[in-house]
Image (cartoon, rainbow, N blue to C red; front, side):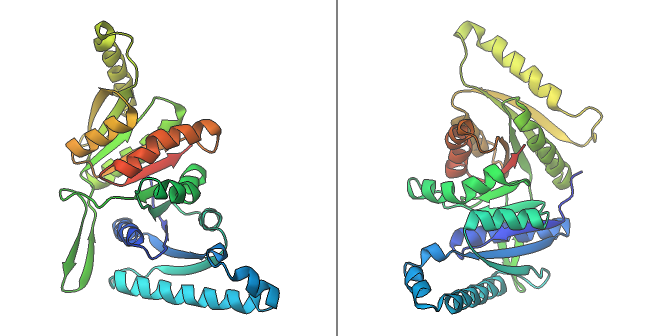
Length: 300
């Protein structure tokens, strides 16, 4: 079973950061892991930074922004954290993806939990510049939180002690194209299935079938390949089933996630090549944008 010892949660103080932070808290509680809340002050967001730099007060300008970011982060964590968790707070100045990636690597983070906006057009720009790059570059898995969780899965509850963080996984969906790209993501999906005593569905989507007459044979071949992914001699209580669908991958993934009330979708991502930009944009990005639950992206 895979271990999670350190969780990194970048925070920009948006409502999407709140959702991501609550998931990060839940993971930290469940795995008894350390949680680091990170905020990045991006000077490019301040149009007058160049003017300040030319006046000779740049160092003071940066110090003030850094202190402001630290105060905001402290207030955010104070408001959204209950007493059982004491996260480490860090504030960096620079480009958000670079700061997230470098810090995650330096601290050997086991998972990065990030919020995404899930809006067409605008979010493609935001996702492309931050979450997209982190997902395709991070050496550790990235858990992206977009839409609010459905009622049957994860939920936030309020008690007399404040916010509670109940994100219990009962149904996990692993999507594979049978490439090497998928193998590491499968390991994480199986580990989470064991950890939460969840049900795991292995899904493959056939984008093209030569003819209706050959559809049955194509589904049978894909099913056989999925069966080979089920670990032999695994725990007897491990609940795994397979599914083969026909159509556009992202549409079928989202549809199955909705139908089966999936709590987590696990997917592999290729990396930084031009091909991956197309694949990521057409599949993983769309699942993030349209899907009903968090997506765990695992890079080879």
